[in-house]
Length: 452
Image (cartoon, rainbow, N blue to C red; front, side):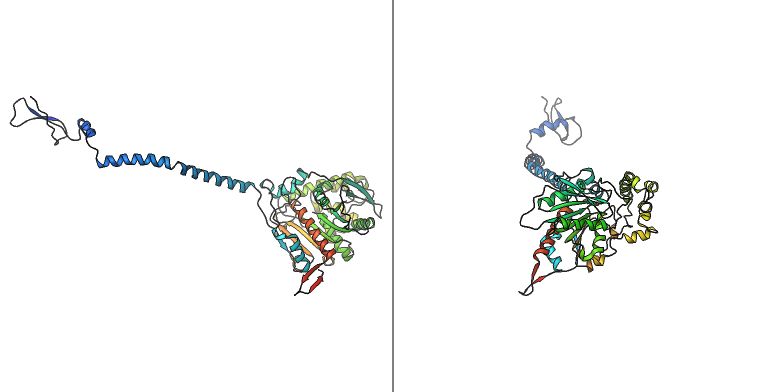
């Protein structure tokens, strides 16, 4: 009979004779960690380490099921945050304007009535760039709902200017007629300012667009073009409107280079200008100073091409008073002005011409309330040319500036009425209300009717 006994003292199995046993009895010695001992370990009772391992597996499975909503919440929060960020990036950002003015009764009334400080400019991200703002009115024109009726007005020297009247306007019966005379820039016409006409028509205001000699697809009957700061033609137009509507209130909204003409008129005729209020959008305060930005040259070329087309179209009528070949070859405003206006106006040099056409040459004589709307990123006119001192010392001058808006742009959407047009109409209504009704201020319960 052979007996098996396990010995735990070695690394390998061996047979050893059993003491006091028969010759045919041997001891089989096996190591404890031997593979042959594995069935014995599995069948044996679990140790503390094995219990801990099993418990960890159970808890891992439990936490996996339990943390599934947690992971969903984390991922959902990240997705929602990304969506909110993209929405805030793609949606319009609000830009509050800065208002420059001198303390006065009129300024108090305007602030209360128009609330300029809270009138944010909110352009869509797609059109917030200054170049897009500048070119958008020409790329995507406003869907004009107005109907224009053109009237040609013959001036004293037999010259002709065109007036485009808005005809589909319902004027209030019990109110005085309010006429908004719109002066577009050198490249503008009635269609380029149609958004303002639509908005003003909805408020019961009569709009009329002034087209200079040879501009706005008009014909030229005399060998003369209107220079930047020559207000003689505008004077006759305003007198004609007063004769046509004797009790009307005339206001003016000018754009770009049209502001040069408007400011020159106000300075030359002073208190006899027969205008209640005015707005200048993207004005040029000095004719010979333009933006030094590299992109300004591109816009100058576009304007020069338009002016060359006018010269080419009326070359036969202007050939005796201007240098037509030299004007058509010009690629700068100084060269163009020297070939077109020096001989026509009898100026010796460009310095004399720019001095005579400086829009602020008679600024002390301007007597009506004026609002200037300027964009600090204007690619045509530099922000360094803005005379901030005017708004510190003149109580009838007000200015709103925005960080962005381009040149005569201020579009918040592709085809909507511009921010500048809304501000202009609100301002004109506030001035007319101040002019007609006056403004009362309570000085310790003593009301006093006040003026500017």
